[in-house]
Image 1 (cartoon, rainbow, N blue to C red):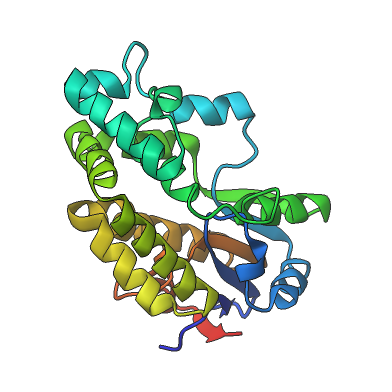
Image 2 (cartoon, rainbow, N blue to C red):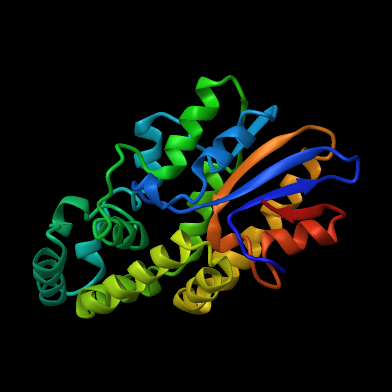
Length: 258
């Protein structure tokens, strides 16, 4: 299968839609052929974001929070927390104590995204969502907030804390890995991006990648059989034996890189 970030998908009823692989960063300059992306978006009836984006900021924050009365400092010894806090502050300029009520994997993401900075005011996902809303597309999403909450509940907190502490122990490695993913994205090397993401997810790849790919592909196939749409979804979900593109093909869709 060819590589690429923007794909045309044609349903069994010959309705043309598009699927675009995004990355959760602010620098829109990494989007190859951004004009083509925008023109495709404006030809469809519906816009699908990966997660629910029309919720209020308060609701978005709540679904990222640990259960009431719990925070990251409660999930490890005081000594380990102090060391982690100092390491993250020194390496990334972030005081994790400000974010201690977030799920550890969400906190890890906040730290990693700080590496990239970026020139835009909004991350790519929200920028595209804003364009879709401003141009009158019907707004839909592939995963609800409740589904996202369920995911975090299913990932053992011990695993989440282990990943967060690993980030504190090896900050240089984390920076190198993330910058390599951005390079793959910028160059449209979606296969390599998928392979690296799969490797970094380790034993939770089935939950965070394969299961979600299956559910999202089924939603896309059912919803866009007779209605045109533009789907924005994380680029790592596109490729692989259990990637969205291959699953859509098995569900009767024709796929073509643009």
